[in-house]
Length: 394
Image 1 (cartoon, helix red, strand yellow):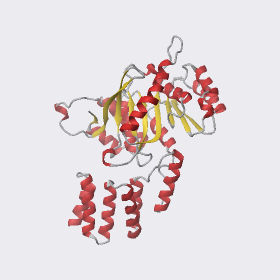
Image 2 (spheres, helix red, strand yellow):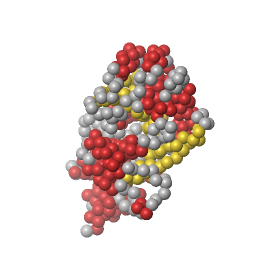
Image 3 (cartoon, one colour):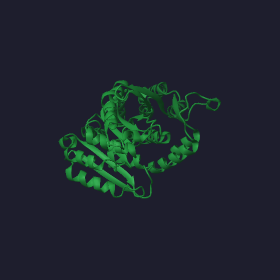
Image 4 (cartoon, one colour):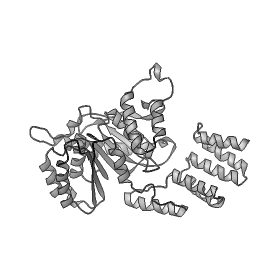
């Protein structure tokens, strides 16, 4: 079952000039269009969807004693690649507009500003409050059960079902944001990074502080991070600073903590996710121009060490570098770049176009044709390859 957006929304995403603008427009359009997760096509859905955001699944949990609905979004070229991906877990994906926004943002920023990621949404039909301690006696049995569910059932299921790397992110907002913080303080190694948007830190604040001072966080030796984002107009301006004070006084060196207070953005701000991703991967898109293949490889080797899994140079970076060499008529170097790139990404349709242009400029027209045709065997509708093939035939 597919989750689809209509053509007007696709144009919004395509024409947005910046990530923040895209996010704000995306949310507005999703709400206006009332995007749904229809299980069957109707007469109005005869055409192919403009944008596919994912599929609905579920997992029977023995720990929780119920079926957990899941929303799953894979990177665009997942089925045509051999790549492995980090995983972002979103709490409360039954909030459809929010899930759609996260999925579209990952696609929009993926391989340009951040690594491509698998998105797993955990639906909470009972509401986010299911993740809180009970009001009567502040019993944490249920949130503890969900942590156990993640560790023993959901994460193993995802890792066994999809091509993943050992880098995981947990995202939650409001009451789910509380759970994100609670999970970090209870089992910091479960995820590599935690994003809590407008977290309900007024829930059991003494318990949270005690966990900070004497819980598992104190023995943490591996790199972990927590990023809290909230707005100044939602009643957290006194609560978050007190929590932050305790964190800063007791956090280990391996733990990175950041807080952003936004202005007049409301509860669970729309731009939180983009801001978090750019903080988590600040130099995935290099600050300085990498003008040689060696520099590109070295840059992503540094990132691989930082994040604990192999990060290959993105196709976009390699393609741009190769075309820079073509423009400067350094065809030998351009050929070396694309040969390396196609070893790393044998399914990279864009890279075959790049190599085809190199062959064309070298006067090897038949080899150029083979490269453009190879790109079309990967994606028969790839318009860029079609255009270059047409130029070759003129």
